[in-house]
Amino acid sequence: MFSSTSPEAGRDPWADDAHPGPGRAHPPAPRAEPDADDDGPPARRGRPRRLRRGGEPARRPDDEPDEPDEEEIEPVEVRRPLALTVAGFAALLGVGLVLGAQTAGPGHRLPFAFVIFGVQLLFVLAWTMAARPPALLLVALFGAAVAAAADVAAVRSDVAGLTPLGYLAAGGFVLGVLGQLVRRADRVRVTDALGTTLFVMFGVVAFTTLIVLGRLPAGTQAITVCLTAAGIALTVARITDAVLPWPRLAPQVPRGAAGVVLGAMVGTLVSAVLGSYLVSFTPTSGAVVGLVAAATAVLTDLAVGYAEAGRQMAGEPPTMWVARHMQGPLGGFALAAPAAYAMCVLFL
Image 1: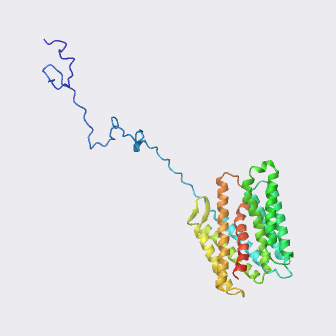
Image 2 (image 1 turned 30 degrees about the vertical axis):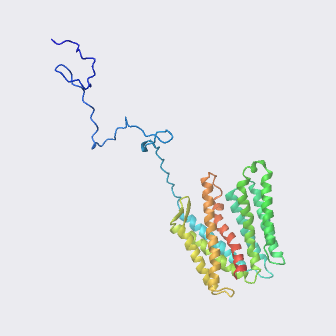
Image 3 (image 1 turned 45 degrees about the vertical axis):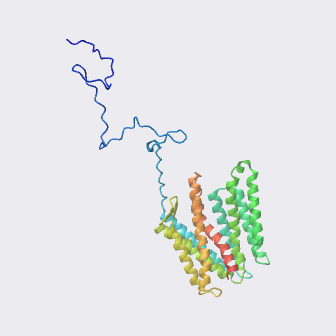
């Protein structure tokens, strides 16, 4: 009979002098290491962490937080009927300005001044209704008043120059800003309204430069070449956007680079052809002047599209549909007019 309690029960079974006897249980087998070919993840328990120089445990790649996936922005759909409508409006606006310039003469400047004043009113309406600055009605009234005063100064002044127009634009801007500061509710947004007020006053005066340009010796021909190039550039760019808006310049803007480039190229080509038939121009001078006007017009139209997309992304409520889509062509012709004046004075 074996005793129920082994005399060596208190001894360490792992001692060096311990030998298994007949009545002694074998020591437990050591833990098997994971096989190197095992597909499972390696065990992390018992692994020592290396310390950084400051005493912090080094981070493992597993501890790094997962980076969130970037959201893909859905591109805005290009509406072909809308692009074709804007193209038609740009073509009609260009034809009206060019034909109005042909009616101007040394003693007959009023018909062209009436045409310019009508376009200026459209410009003020479109930009104030689309941008909606504080004290909208006040800014619109000041813009119309500056447009009328600039047209009268351009028709009645003895010397054709831009100095009176600059004074009127600066005065209208100051009055517009002061009018927005009067009301306490409008003071919060007065910083946002500075750009809109400045562009409204500058735009109406920019159209008046066409009247001043018509009084110069080669002014009427310069108006014909520059505004024809600008109108064709805007029309071709919008038609190309309706057919092939590629490559997209931005997902939020329904415009393509092909339309911008092709419009400027076609406008330059047409101005070169016109320059070969006009007395004060050559094909080279017509191409240079037309290129400046066409590029200015299409880039301004594109910038207006980016500004509209920015307002929509900022969460501003949508405004009058017609005013928003008239902005581009009107802004393009507004900046093409002083470009035509500068090219006529400096280049011709």
